[in-house]
Every structure is written in structure tokens, then in C-alpha cells.
Amino acid sequence: MAPRPRLLAESEWLARRRAHEARVRVWTDPHQTRQAHGEKHPVEDFLWEYYSYRPSWLRRWHPGPDVVLLGEAAREYLRWPEYELVRVERTAADATNAADAASSAGGGTAGSEFVEGVRVNCAAFDAKRRESLAWLLGLLRATAERAPSFACFGLHEWAMVYRLAPGDVRHAQLPLRFPPEEIARIVESLPIRCSHFDAFRFFTPAARPLNRLQPERATTAQLEQRGCLHANMDLYKWAFKLAPFTPSELMADCFALAREIREVDMRASAYDCTSLGLAPIAIETADGRADYERRQRDFAERSQPLRARLIAVCERLLAS
Image (cartoon, rainbow, N blue to C red):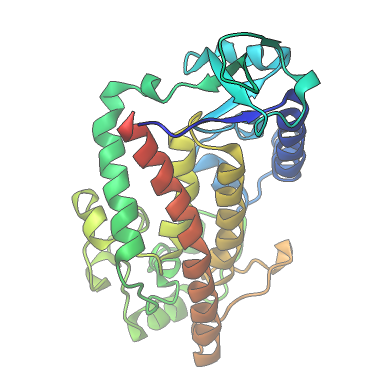
């Protein structure tokens, strides 16, 4: 049985929508300004180009499942096929601002009334996507339950430039912190333990055999673990894959974490990001590796509540 919906008065949900847009514009506006001027940012562009979710989409506010938007302005959401117009009973406990909602009396229990509103229809989730949704739920649960690993030290970024000429690297606008020979020595002196397929697939051919694991797309659910920076960045990807069913506050929370992680990812890489105001995390030293692990543990802990919220969205969609 679906939970009783939460009713939001027009003034309340419009305020939440404005707050969401103001929050994400801090991220979207600088990116779009750079785009307009043909400027690149090798750290922040990743979140837009690799994940391919448009800034305008991130700015849109969606309430998520089991929320009914009241008031005339809510009807604009009906332009999306996942939304529906509903008639629900509002009790005194629901009525935070009775004058703000379009309502019609009659038919309710004592002290209640029926009101019209708009909600996202969980039953409208594409049946063809349910198999992938079940896979995602399994992945999120497995990652949440699996013991995290903190022994990779961000070497995946080094493996992506291993034995490449400086002109062949992905972020050619950034200098490398060391000559290619020294990068190779550092990579070969430390064990590579990358469990994330979407990082491993960008390893240079020479670096692939050095990884203690050989992840494949098919083994993602068996290997993904929350100590991995990229697994935690991917929470943003899973959040937008479920749009418009994902509450936008959750999507923004996932983006905020991914943005922090991306910065650490590049600071710990072989690239010199000081021109971007980012000091290196020197994982080639014992102190640098300890610093990286401390941040890794923090991200692993902070990712868990977000993962739990995504699991709840998946479970709700599969139950409808």
C-alpha cells in the first residue's frame, strides 16, 4: 500500500523550489558562463560532461514520490507525463495554509475536505526500466552493506596517464606534477587496487595489468564499495537517472558531494592543479596517503545517508 501523501501548500512548495534553484545556480551559472566563452575547467567540467545532465535539468525542482502539490501553479507540472492530477482528502493536520490551496468541499470525514493537487505518479515509471531499476537497487544495497576499502590512494588517476607522453593526456591544459618516468616509478612502487569499472576502463593499456582487480561492467555489483570516490560520485548519476521521481533536494545533495569528491580526486592526481587554486594531495608520500585516506573515510560515511535515500526511492518505485 502506498504511504499517505504529504500535502504541500502552494506557498510552501514554491519556496522550496526557489531555494533549490538558488542553491544549484551557484554551480550551474559559472559552468554556463564558461561554456558561453569557450572556457574549460578540467575539474568542474567533469560533473557536466561525464555525467551529461544539463544544468537546466538540475535547476528544475521536483518534489519526489508521495507529495501532492496544491494550488493553481502546480498544474504546470502536468506538462510532464509522469505527473497526474489527483483529488485527495486533506485533514486539519494537513492544512498548514488553507487559503493557499484550491479545494472543493464535501465527501470527506469530519474536519476534512477534498482538494485537488498534482503529484508524480510512481506507477508511470517506465515498465521497460524496471529491470534496470531492480539492478540499481541491488547495486546500492550491496555497496551500502559491503565493507569499504581505503587502500587505493587515488592511483586510478595516475594509471590513466601511466607511460603517456605529456601531450597525450586527457587534461592537456594542466601540467603534470612529475615527468613521465617519475610518474611511472610512483605507479609501479604502489599497489593499484581500483574496484570501479568506470575508472578502470580509462587506464592506459600498460597500466591495466598492474591493477590487482580487473573489474568489468558485469561485476560492478560484486565489486562496488563505498570507500571508492567514484562510487560515491556516482550517487549523483543514479539520482538523475531516476528523475523526475528523485526529490530535487536529494539530487542537489548528491551533486554537492560529487563536487567535493571531484576536487579531491584531481588534487590527488598526477596533474598539477595549483593554477586552479587546488593544492596537491601528495599520495606519493606517506603523509599524503594518510590525508587521502582520511578524506576517503569521510566521503564513505557521508555517502551512506544519500545512498539510503536513493534506496528508498527505488523501493517506492518498484512497489508501485
